[in-house]
Image 1 (tube, rainbow, N blue to C red):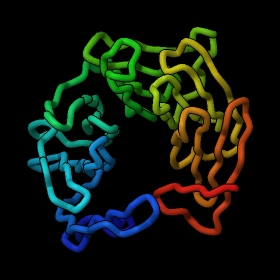
Image 2: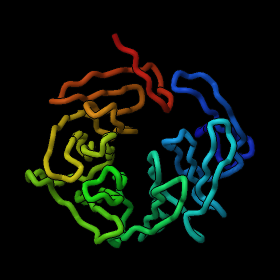
Image 3: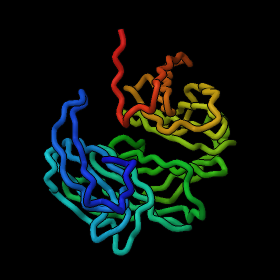
Image 4: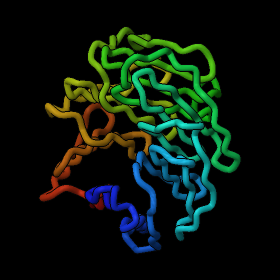
Length: 262
């Protein structure tokens, strides 16, 4: 999808699908406006979420066939979403946002999560799918601009202000990413410090000072052992115990990653 083009001309937009090696697979016309996010399911179906409309969620085959579509709720405007292999969570627009979840794309059923009555926009959010969480229930981690992390699910919400090894959350987290196993949580705060901790907040694993005044555009895991931090023209891979390697680009890199090293 061409993010550089205004979405008011959506009839001219197309979604292009490539393999991870860059080989063209298919494209199809994109008639909608207000793209919020997109990602891939475990079955290699493209999941697309839009802000408003009769339907908010569209699921496509890799050849562009629309397999399924459904709304998040009646008259619900979506401001943010997180997509994983089998489901998604959405934050509704508004000063007191609501949160919705779909945990099975094969049989989508939208449920409302019990929110903590937030009167602010979370600075970051990341879901822990039920199959990866410690209590076997879907959890949504919301970073507060004041510093604490709120944990919401279908049970009572919690406010986490520190890890159990007494590392206090004094600065707001601006980026968060969950490891593939769900065991670790990578966070970047407003001072530019990358902190890796247990996702149940039982312990802090490592810290890395990026020395960047701006937060990275994206944070992602590479396996279970390294975290990728991406800014325009630079990518930093941080491994265990603070070891890192930086990759510089002469211009802005595309929205994908493939590293070839010797």
